[in-house]
Image 1 (tube, rainbow, N blue to C red):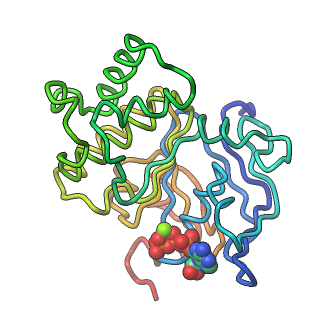
Image 2: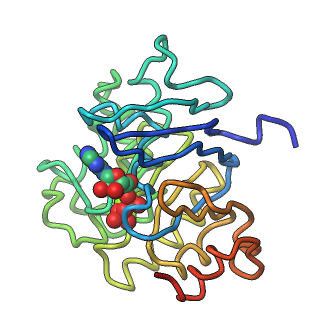
Length: 254
Ligand SMILES: Nc1ncnc2c1ncn2[C@@H]1O[C@H](COP(=O)(O)OP(=O)(O)OP(=O)(O)O)[C@@H](O)[C@H]1O
Ligand SMILES: [Mg+2]
């Protein structure tokens, strides 16, 4: 398979927080227009890994990284890389919905404004398109000037996804995006993830194995900072090659 099928690739990625070595020689490839899930027990390094993908670990003081993270074949840790561009291309959605204390409209328009879009008509179009893509438009189209804080948790999370989409990323990273949501809101986000992969590449961290099985095309299993197994989701769940993976998915762990 040719290289441009891969959007993100890590090569011998190692991460330390101070003396603590939390990711070890990690090699994995994220396929374009697919959903890749990362699962594993608490503390195994999932959030650390996903934060390497758009250099969010830069803002953590004692964090040190060795190895490569390639985005479309180029190392994002190269000193010449523009971090702002990387974060524009590789957006992120967090565990807890974190809308800005602004209107629904302004939450979505914020990113494009920062990147220099000021024309109201253009912004209106971006806001509508992003909210539609995030499956939120119908619920909020008559209240765009209301505070984002007036939305439910699930709506807030879809707003955060709309905010990420507004700056036209290639990749959307999601770190346990449903863990603060009820089952109905979770189903909406899962359906949305399935739609998003038509245009975007999605990487999702999840504690929930059923969720990984439902939404992802590829799954990686991490344990103690190592990528134990990576492959098509069906294979990981139905025919894991590693004993540790099998133990984890059958709940016979630790
Ligand atoms: N800022 C930090 N400073 C020091 N150690 C950290 C920091 N962030 C994470 N760690 C440690 O690094 C390891 C990996 O943490 P990480 O948050 O990546 O795990 P995780 O798989 O996302 O866990 P969870 O499922 O609980 O979110 C853990 O041992 C954690 O305690
Ligand atoms: Mg985490």
